[in-house]
Amino acid sequence: MATASSRSNGNPIRGAAVTLGGEALTYDSLVLAGVDLDALVSEHVARTGVDGIRCMASAVNGAPLQEGTHQAIESLGALEAMKSAIWAKQSAQAVAFEDAVIAERLEAGTRKDNPAWGIRGEIGLALHLSPSSGASFMNSSRLLIDDLPSTANGLRAGLITFEQALVVVSGVRDLRIENRQLIDALLWNGQQSCFSAGTAMLRHRIHCWALALEPKAAANLEDLAIRNRYFDGYQIDDYTVKISGRFPLEQGLPILQAVRNAVDAPRGAEDDRTRAQVAADTAFEVFSGTKAGDSLPVELLLVMNAENLTEEAEHPVLVPGHGYLSAAKGLEILAGSLDNPLDTWLRNLYVAPETGKLVAMESAGRLFTGQLKKFIKVRDQYCRTPYCNGRIQELDHVVQVSRNGKTTEENSSGRCKRCNMTKEAPGWRETPLPGAGRHVFEITTPSNHAYISMAPAPINGTGPQSPPKRL
Image 1 (tube, rainbow, N blue to C red):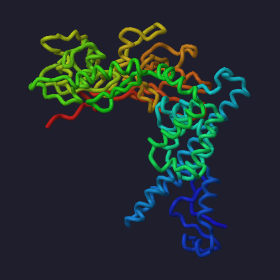
Image 2 (cartoon, rainbow, N blue to C red; image 1 turned 90 degrees about the vertical axis):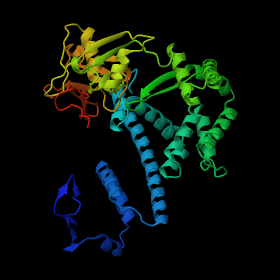
Image 3 (cartoon, rainbow, N blue to C red; image 1 turned 30 degrees about the vertical axis):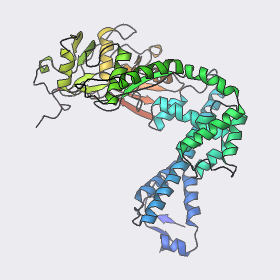
């Protein structure tokens, strides 16, 4: 019987001596004994479950890099196949988890109208994704596992990538189940080379089949474009905001035409902007109604001391929900332009130098209002659900009012709408952790996994969060 010098979670600790009948067992001795190591590894993962998966991840990280050029490329291909298999397993596991929770709630008579409430938010946390991305992953996984067996099997076998699988999912999402399954079969009938010509050709092929199978789908595309219209933006680094959107034809074409007309218009020799820069400036003017380069009325919230507003200021300026600006840029925005003076509200928020925690305010009412409302938005900056980083849309009680939660700074959090709804799921609990320095609370999900939400550290002029001095 195999023995080990010590064990952890039921598995031998790496490096421990394993013996059989007094003889040390090694890789070579097992091979010489005719042991099927591939089958043994598979059985190990199957029997140990989560621990076995983590063991495999550790083994992959510990594998040596291949030095020969041929083997290096073989290694990249093998790792890609492993990624595909992992994506397939994650999708199947997510679907199984959702099915199990829904079944438990239906049996218990909980949330009968919406037994899936909050499940996808918990999946997002487990995958370190925002709730929106977690829901998107779950939607794609559900369709892949339930309706596209051939594509799911191809992903498991490493024959296609997850990106290709998502193209298939996206292309058949709006079709009837029988047509989804027919296209899934056509993709893998051996007479097509649908996955070797790139995702663009794959997308076009699926779209062609979809139109042939459901001609009415084409007539619905216009309505779908109207329903799916959106406009959004987010900060991608400390200096740049990326704007994205989707518009139906009658809305999108006028915008494109205005931008193209500006780009193609003759410009004076003093205008040294590139075509891309002209397009960006024109889009800004169309959406904001303000000429590019002019000032916009803003409320400038400063997490610093007022005396730092000098030409020698070095401490960054916080724009809640977007990030920090340099002190110089903050002063520039504050000053505005000579032609269009800036209508600016200036507010100071101070911090405790020993912890970097913002000074608290409280309210006796149920709603977060006035200065407390502004304070919470500055303190949290983004939705406080881990990995979300969504825009703060609602101010939330950590412990709900229905559970005797108070309207205080300690019992508050800024949340996006999705996360504020998710926390109402059965078994979801949140608890403030006072005395932890910055504002902290613990999230416990229905599956009894715990996550810590800590307010981001403000950059202030003193204490441990002080920015580095310029050299």
